[in-house]
Image (cartoon, rainbow, N blue to C red):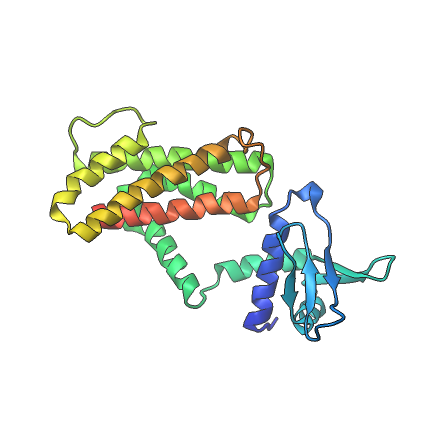
Length: 253
């Protein structure tokens, strides 16, 4: 199967839109053809907060490859779904080496998956990798809650393993006190750093706290906020954790 970058990006956009809607609430993408502005078509879907304008030729090529299923509704309005083959090809694209922003993301992933990180933070890595593996599945309340639970445990394990590696005295032994533990690790390293790096570490601590709040929301399936979690929420938690793990490990070690 040969697709241009534009078609691959369109497929990723479509798959991620579908995954952002609970499975039982999904419906077909609707196609709107503007009457006054030539060129391209507009797509409407519940996974977006606005319609998206695309080149209709890209969509036709996806249909020819069997990645989407174009159809006409009873009113003659075109609609389509992403096919199982489309989801499978998306998984292939996600695992393929790509250019250049994705390479940055892959560098973070490589750092976490490397033997050196695993040896320093074995328990944290195990929890995080289990959460990451769940992203291959469609979102559900149960899956989202498990991702949150694993992420919370990964945070606790990382903070504990970091404090242990740095041999910090008088640090809380309570695993739930992750912010206190990370703050102590940062404070121990600050005297040897420049003012700009020190400021970046302060921002990382605040970032850690924000991610921790997201994890709490994730583990409780958004019940407190009255929000329904989607695959995008799970992806966000796993990715943001990867970034903060990688950066704290790189700077503090």
